[in-house]
Length: 367
Image (cartoon, rainbow, N blue to C red; front, side, top):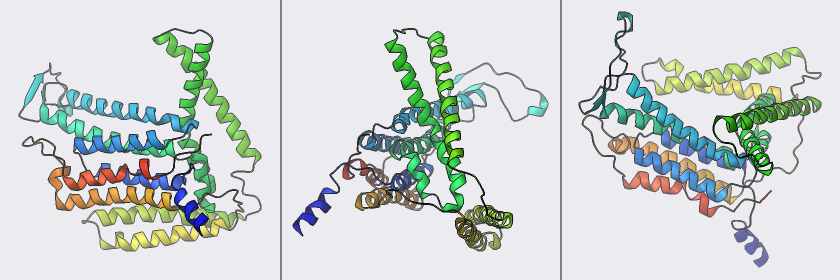
């Protein structure tokens, strides 16, 4: 009994790889929290929490090296939103910062202004929107850096295995490009390449694209040799019925969610459509899953660290969602009149909860 107790306590300390579903639930919870606010302080804290967990718990696999690309992508999103506000009508506020020469447009483009006065309210509005989208992108990048995309394929239902294969391949594009860039740069340094600027970019870009193409062809050949996307002896009517039920059910779920969120739609498009779509999708998955035989080698186990990680992400999203009804002024800083963004105790506690997986989960196993 004592040995069992020691092993159970050591499960949180010994290095092991967490279930990929736990990381995705955690990341989606953070993305949900980021979508519920435009407060730049909270958004910066969400990005900091995601970066902290990635720095503490990512491994040395190729997909773990792509998180930096998502940070650069987030910065590009913020910069593009600010530039958009400067080019297209930046003078919608009362606090004009500077004025650019305005370009006159024809009559059919009435309501659109190019350049002109740039106000602080418009710039802050672009900054807040860009930071929200950037924070959501960083959260998805954190999930890609922490979860093994190949192990995600085990979690896909049997009926969606072929579509899941395409999704997993798409999710692994960014990690593979990051690995290719690092490998090409390392090879250039070993050969004494010291160029910079456009010439260095051309020397890196072409080998990276060639390497990505070769790896894509190799992956396609490997999938084809293992029989992926082959119908086999399944009757056409069964495949058609299962595919129609799954696609139609997912469309019904989307319509039902829209009906619940929009109070002006008829009631029939709300809960009834949602439940009917979910039932049709589950029926199609069960019908299509019978024709696919799958075996599981070393299945991923779900333990206490996975539960804690998932609860941290869900709790963060739930607390930010509850704050919208309790104190919306904290989550959406006023632009008219201008107010300083504030940090309330409840959102701060929610984001602190999001950073806990970087401390309470076991470290990853080096490859």
